[in-house]
Image 1 (tube, each protein chain N blue to C red):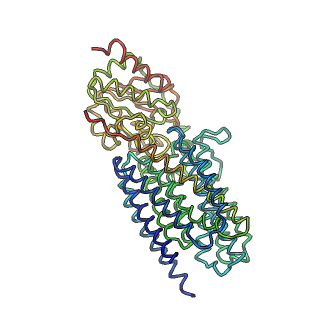
Image 2: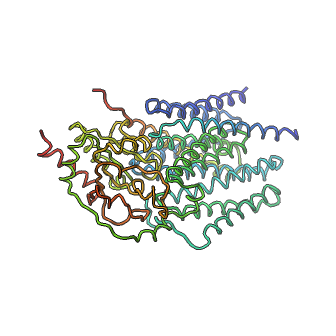
Image 3: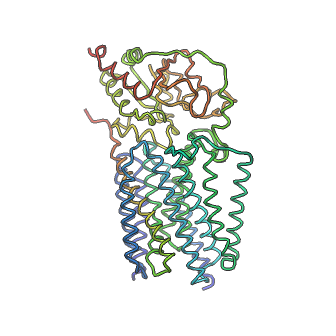
Length: 100
Length: 467
């Protein structure tokens, strides 16, 4: 049991490193036209903190901890909803010239 | 079995998030990216709800419903307000990460001290520092962008500002190390770290001016992502790490692009107090400025083959984008080739101008990046500058003492003729004289961007325009 947390931590670091490289690769190819929607989309994606918030708010914990979790859940949920909605609203506006 | 199902859900969600960002590489596939993102988030939430030990369903329901109730109206803001909405949601993201980090820490201190390995506590400290400084920093940025009364718009500087900020951060980090070394005995340091992180976020944004907002917003985006990564380390959750890393790298790349477009470094943006230095540079010899009427300008523009419009933050402030669309229509109808030259830092966030112009349904292939339009600028018969200033200032090319020296610009001065719409000859946000306005072939159109462009349209659609 003593070595397990360390190995686990290193494997998490691997995941982090690889995900960062993938992220850098993908984002450099994002169209410059779409940098504002990109930002609101990544806003919504980083609201993945909702996962941690649910785990804290949902389990049987002292009330104060539950309250912290619930506030975090509220904040993440707000970001998910508004982030995806506004991204789609902006992307809908990008149109090519109508073919004549 | 349940554990595997949850991990599988997280795996699917990770893949969908990657596809979501991948599809943003083209406006044609971008909306599919949003659907992939929504699907990923749904799968992730459903998977998490399956976790063992979830009992407080009412708490989850209340928080989620409130989140939806606030989130939906937040997505209706006018597009000129998108920068402050973005900053506000970074604040929410930082807050969520900070609170979850604090909750986990106190939970483990109280019940399971054996969980507090140095690695985990390190991750918790990183999470709360990043989370809470993103929270207050983004609130400040949102306040500056929204022009809230009690938050100064101009950069605020005072002696030893950077030194005291660094000192504050150093103390926060030192206290954080204390918590890592003795997580139980020195738990009193934990709230100190939180307070210092909150204070540091505010102090970090105070010296930053509007022109640097695109970089700062991108950087805060990155921090919000990194705090989610730290949460993933705390909770042993790979989905949090991957999604947070995607967000973190996105913010980082956008910040780098913004910095390059201003020929400045991160440290210079964060600690340089842009706009302060330039107050002195504003006093120069006064050169003569020539003025033109909207009638005259309209006549010249309708004779042109190629008109390039350079929009800037002034267009957003004046809400002139719909008039600009009418101008585009009038000129296009006469066979004039109209293109828009978009500087990467025009506006208050990356891509701001593109979104405003797309809203008015100007086809996106007319929105041309700086590097692509500059070779065509000598062929342009008319350049129309609407509320842009530093991004067209030729001083950036040769004036070594200018604060914007070295910044890549749109070559408006190389066009055959230039019209610039401006409220008055007061120097713009950066407070620098713009050589373009005094150039031989430049004529000023003084007034509010919306009404001047409106005048141009009226002159084009009325009498003289009809053949």
